[in-house]
Length: 135
Image (cartoon, rainbow, N blue to C red; front, top):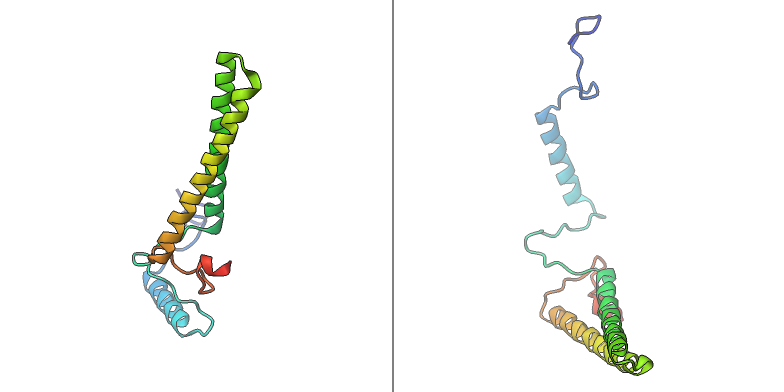
């Protein structure tokens, strides 16, 4: 399709096609600047760097481990109370058992996280400290 002047109308917003040589040169200059800058952080290799769970993900996992234990225990107790007609008794007992199970799950997950950190499965954060060193 042509406009009044006979030039072709482009659907890409009117931008000229990218010059591969200029882009490669610009990329090379950026890489050189990153290597020589004093403020630049070293970029870890994505293939070799082990992934570290964020503090938020660890907190969400631990809280969900605890809450799920309490909720499942309370649900079982409520269900047994409905079946047997002993309304508060089973609910109280199984909520307590669910709390104990939730605490055990949190301790188990924390132990697994600590073992992964000690064996080198968890890397240091951007400040150079491991998450356990910040306690």
